Length: 240
Image (cartoon, rainbow, N blue to C red):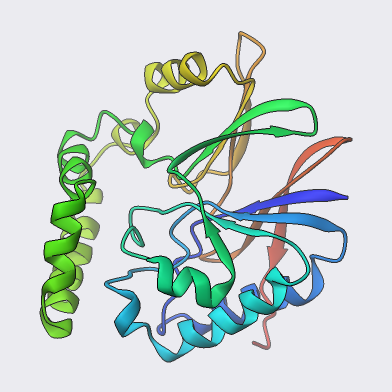
């Protein structure tokens, strides 16, 4: 048996090839899995459960079917932090705290989306602090559907533009932030996404930081079992 971790699928109506690849993954790769963790940014953008796109509702039904066989856990990402209890219930997903510790086959492990570790990106961290306030999320949710969609589109455009101007160092996790989280959680392994840089980092103190990859060009899955851990690539079906 094994536990699977994925993240940064950025599903949208514009990239149905990713949705098809994810659906295929759910159909074919979970037979020996005992849990599935989705580490944020399942969707490219999420502005409210009340305006979920048709493809997202279809996916919710698919995930709900999976949840009858094994638990499906979800941690909010920076793109889908507005995903709420209504959609999670429809999808059979259990929403976890943004930083969650678990004992994974005997190893103390901390899991998270990863954006909180990119502390050198000061502008983003200011935005992240603002959207963490429940009042800010509530006020946003009170806006009309059209207004929310417009704000989300504007944020996406601004994010893409500003990211092109940021260095690789700013866009990556900050080592001191990683060390601080390890110390705070007393864990040996850390699993996150967000940076789109899949790798298994062996740290000098013996800890490991594992980064799951995005699904832009292929699927990326972290498989963890009693035998160890491995990052798997799932090529997209060229016919899809």
